[in-house]
Image: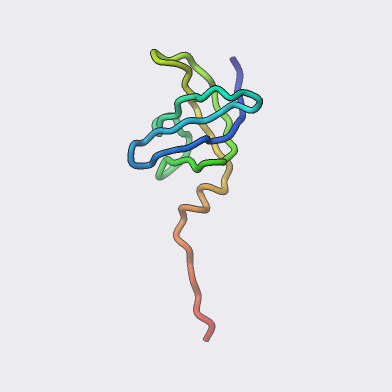
Length: 85
């Protein structure tokens, strides 16, 4: 199966996993932090648009090679605040 796109249903940073849904499909696909393709802290946010490959795991389908949009990386970057002098 080729690359699919969809949205993050939920992702728990403390546990390191969550679920995504492919566009047009309500089936939950397991998403582990180790399958996220990004530098730094690997996380996903509910509602985030992602692309991924789907593979059959021992307990159901998994999303692997997960890539998200750049907005999430910006969300976890510390904000720089400058004072008006």
